[in-house]
Image 1 (cartoon, helix red, strand yellow):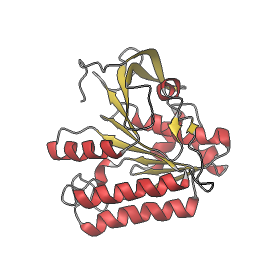
Image 2 (cartoon, rainbow, N blue to C red):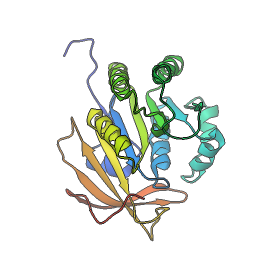
Image 3 (tube, rainbow, N blue to C red):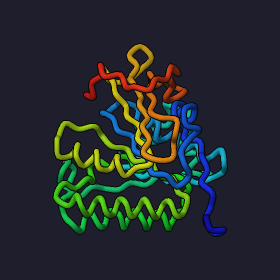
Length: 251
């Protein structure tokens, strides 16, 4: 390693299972959370973004939802997101889809513009952590090869600058999108899978969280029960295993 290269460090992810099992996320790593709606993806993303405040770092949260909805979601984990924004520790911004329905992100220029817009935001706000909530509406089936290339190029850009990114992806039953999702999972540092029998996930009806690494982590693949608790966020029942629980469904 040259003197100009920074040593790779683990940072707290805000995910209790990841932090207990792996010690956190790698600085400059690319991570995916994959799960159905109402499974806790957004809560975990907020916990990751707002963990930056402990180190006085900055986070960038990019959403396709109404920004007020994100702020309301933050109240579920007893955190005043607006105060973090006012303090300059978190920037909340929205990317608006030209067409609201899925699978409409099918022009080459739209794919290129999406990643260019992301690069411009990173340059403007210089965050240490980034959340993309959600990536699913921007996945392109028609230009999947281009999407892979730009995703990988963005990964290298972030890694070189020590920026850790977390993408949220909805679980889908569309085979073509699942193939695309699987390819992105292979390009990531590690993946977090959320599975549930019911929606929403709570203490009475917990889900299963599985964490799977592609590189860097030698502790293996683990799964545990988890639930979302108002005022606390995502909590876990820390009985980790090396195999996922296959009796859960993803809808």
